[in-house]
Every structure is written in C-alpha cells, then in structure tokens.
Length: 221
Image (cartoon, rainbow, N blue to C red):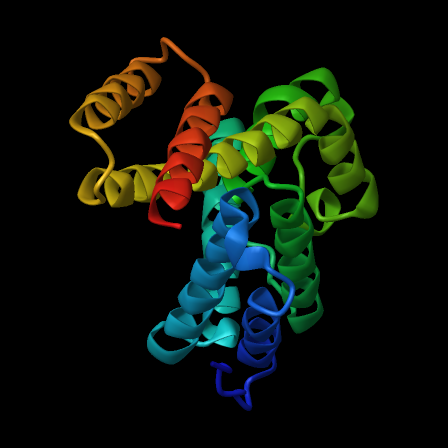
C-alpha cells in the first residue's frame, strides 16, 4: 500500500522513503527498519513543530535576544559596567549566523559565552573589554570551534545515544507486549535495567533486542 505524497518537501521525502520499504524488503530487516522509524519520528516532530511552534524567524529573534542578554550579563560581571553599545541590524544578522554555526557543531550559546569569558579573555586580556561585534568575528568563532572539538564530538555522540536509547526503549516495550516467551521477557527486563544502571553499554542492549526481534519474526513466519 503506497503512502500518499504530501506537498511539503520534507513530508514528500519521507513518503518516497516509506514507499520504498516494501519493494526493497527493508521491512524484513529489523535493524534497518528501526533507523527508518527514527527518520519517520524526526519528520513527524518537524511537521508538528512547523504547525504548532513559533515561526523560524521568531525563534531566531529569541535566540539572538538570549545571546545578547547572556553577553551583557557576563560583560557586567567582568567590567562592572553596563554594555551600552547599540546593536545594528547588521550586527543582528551576524549574531544569528554565529548562533547557527555553533549549533551546527552540536554546541550551544552557553558554551560559547562561557568559553569567551572564562577561558579566552582571561588568557588574552588585550581583548578586554570585549564587544559583541568582536566576539562574533570569524577569529573568535573559529578559535572556539577549534578548542571545543572534543566537546562537540561528545555532545553529538550523546545526542545520538539519547535518540537510539529512546528508540530501543520503544522497541523493548513493543517486544514486552508481543507473544515472546515469559523467559525472554524477563531477560529483556533484566538487560534493560542493566543498561539503565550503566552495567552494560547501549551496543549490548541493541544486540539483545535485535536477537529477540528476529526470534519473534521467525516464530510468526
């Protein structure tokens, strides 16, 4: 059965993917299907946010206000002076681009401001007092990204593991509702608890769940 094609380009992309699941036998491979499920949920979240949340333009403005507020707060702590320089429309565009660049590397505004005032400026007093235009320069941003590579990598790994952990939890619940044996259900509960207690890593949990899914599939064939 084919999935109706939406006018929205993101939904259309998902429709094309879902229409290829059966013809290519992807639905017969639990490990691949769970990644398709992750994609489907990501698109659903995008569509929901697009319909119910604030517009991208409004969100961008809010992010920019937060960035400026955090800078001004830190500036006051550092210098005992209020930051009164006017922020021009050009400055606003640059700030938005900096925020976007930082987020693309899995980092946040808090990380950038914290690094600026707690690491960079103490080691480089010639840049004190700083200006918004100054810290949004390519030099500052690239220096931050270079020195935060390990943090960026760790954040991305944590985000991926969080997404996978949520997916595995959903698959585990589905297995517990299925007709696998009580022995397998007890084993699954134990392995899930072991993962929550950090006694095993996520890869071990994934392998166990995949084995049960295959066992269930073979049982129902």
